[in-house]
Length: 351
Ligand SMILES: [Ca+2]
Ligand SMILES: [Ca+2]
Ligand SMILES: [Ca+2]
Ligand SMILES: [Ca+2]
View 1 (tube, rainbow, N blue to C red):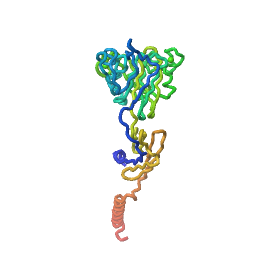
View 2 (view 1 turned 180 degrees about the horizontal axis):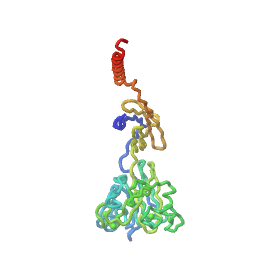
View 3 (view 1 turned 90 degrees about the horizontal axis):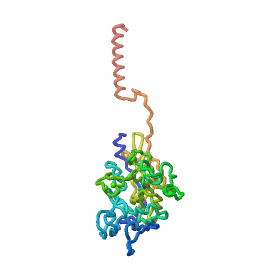
View 4 (view 1 turned 30 degrees about the horizontal axis):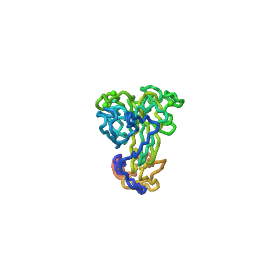
């Protein structure tokens, strides 16, 4: 089995559950803010730190040049997440690459996101009830200074016990309690694979392009939510930037998340989709055109398919099993016999 054959001739048959009907945009269908500043002007109209907005929502600027350049009363629509999109409703800060060469992680690009008021960062009872139409990856962008005041390491470093807000609870303890996990692909400005991925914040939008004008960095945390409503808790901080939230739809069909192969076999990991799933007991694999035995296990949403090639023990060379050599051996015998006869003839011309 050649390496090329191993990589190219694998065909796996995956029987999938019946797909449900596909849903169109948007993914974020509602965000209900509680405990925010929800500021109003003298006439009672929304002003400055208005309630949270999200992708697809349009509102008229209540302060000039917030969240982007424009006069009061002109409309702004929150678009999809990407380089230099505005971060907060009451600032002209932008999300950007952590450095000019460390761009916004690809898994965030094109997601839907929530713009909240930066001045809600110290509101102890703040929360967002977020309703999503489909199962999604939800990413939290949390300022590195949160909890420990130090921009040189991740939020609430090193053990998430810091309480700078002084409420007696480690800042944003709910991130830990509710099972959010840091996204660690080595995509941080420290180049440290044990620390979460990074995104930059260009405060005042005074830098043009990725990683320009960056004043702060946020680390990225992830949790998967099914369709329905989930809650984001209080920012619980004392002066650093408010968190951001990006929602990326879960793949609808299963996707291969890992594929490793060598001369001793192969392993595939397949993540279930939100609408269709792998039925682990129906998987059939052919290799070089022939069915092969696989070990299939399923843990949560991940199906793992392993195939191991039976090791072939070293074979001792046996020339009798080689027809060409066998013929040569016999030819050699004949040659030696003829020589012996000839010699015998010479030595014993009459015998
Ligand atoms: Ca820190
Ligand atoms: Ca606290
Ligand atoms: Ca800046
Ligand atoms: Ca910028």
